Image: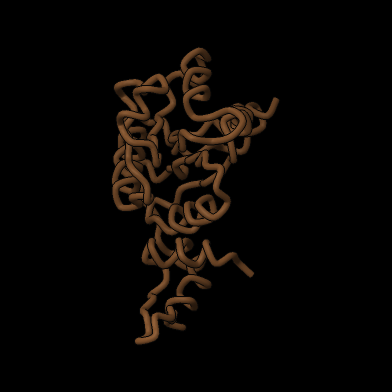
Length: 200
């Protein structure tokens, strides 16, 4: 029930074990499909290291990407990470800003070349809003350095990774961020009373 492009992305990311026959046809190992299907079970057993007080909520990540196949690939990969992040997705900058107002992510993974509000305009908007100005952002883009610069460039504190998506590097960055925030005491698990106050 998924598109061919999605399966290709899964194989490129190593989620599916694929090989080619002598005739050039792709074949997928059945066991790798089964592992992918039961991947959600892995999330329940792979828990992040807990802070000394035993309370820590998942890192909140917002993925902003217009390609639906890539969004699905992000969700599958990120939700399998040992830090067990809470992942949300948006298809353009406008939708992302709305989601940010509701979810207040710790990390935004941002594509730059999107229809509607692209990543450049979204970053400009974020920097002008006090509540969003200091949100951690990492860019994953098919644009090269010259193209990024010609379209306005990026802030110095925003890491840039080329496509295809380097999930290992993103995971390392997310783990560093989660540990840094936890060390500051900001990833404490929210109590039901505090949640009610936030909703009010």
